[in-house]
Every structure is written in structure tokens, then in C-alpha cells.
Length: 197
Image (cartoon, rainbow, N blue to C red; front, side):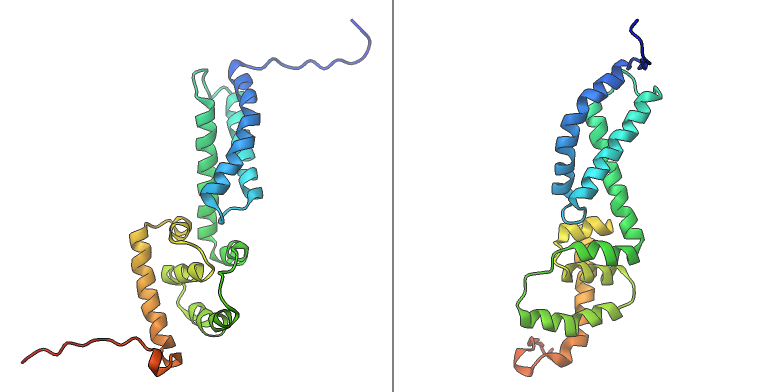
């Protein structure tokens, strides 16, 4: 034996070695998959953190012997990662204050002309902010930030039918309040059919 302090490394189990072999490919691909799936709701850094956390949790299970040798590790890692991403989105939904200040602020503003942006800021945003703190308000807030229906439904955890219904009621409410700002020639004309008595 040669002099010096030699650390003895414990040998890895078969599952731990397989998991170690999965690491490079998992960390190269999973953050990209999460980003594509949850963009713009989760940043690239958040997706990388989620993938690393998923790997660490699965590694802890492997080290404690909770995973058997037939476990399909790539699928197990992906499932753990997706579940953590969904948990992160649920946490954002529960904390509306944090959601409004952190997540919505990261959404790129919608592409509108300066005049339209000014109208949006002066007229529409204050009316949205004055709405009761309901799901309808959240929907129109997110839509005014430029999110698509699929993203809004994902953030709020609702299906698209419910989204469209709530948005429709919110738009009716906002349209009623904005009606006084619409010039007469630009108001939508409603056809009324008179019934014969």
C-alpha cells in the first residue's frame, strides 16, 4: 500500500449505476422538454432546477433501496420531473400575489401599437384590477399579458370549455364598463327582432 490517506468509496448498486449513467442524457434533454411544454410559464433556469431536483429525488430513492432493478429509470425520471413542474405551477396558482408579481411580469407584453397599449393601460387594466378576485379576473389578466388559451388553462388548472365560458362573462362585464368610451359610430349594433303580438 502506498502512503497517504486513501478514501474508500462504497460500490454502487446496479440501480444506482444505471441512474448515474442516465444523468448526462436526462439533464441535456429534460430541461428543454419542460421549457417547450411550459413556456412561458417556467423559465429555462426553473426547468433546469426542476430536472435536477427530480434527479436528486430519484437518486435518494435508489440509495435507500426503494427502487428495484427492473425500474425503468428514464421514464421514472421523466415522471418525477413532470410532477415537480406541475407542483410548481400549482404553487404559483395558489399564491396569486406572487403569481401576479413574478410570473406575469416574465411574460412578454403583447404586440400592440403605442396607441392601443396606452388605451389598454389607461382604460382596460384598471377595470380588470377593479374586478373581484375571481377566476374571471385571472383569465383576463393573463390574456391581457399575451398568454394563449392553452397556457391560461394550464396555469389555472381548468379545461378550455370552462376558460372560454368564464372569459366570455368577464368580457361582457368589461365591455359594459367600457361602453361609455366607445364612439357611437364604432359601437356594435345589436339586431333586435320584434315579436308580433
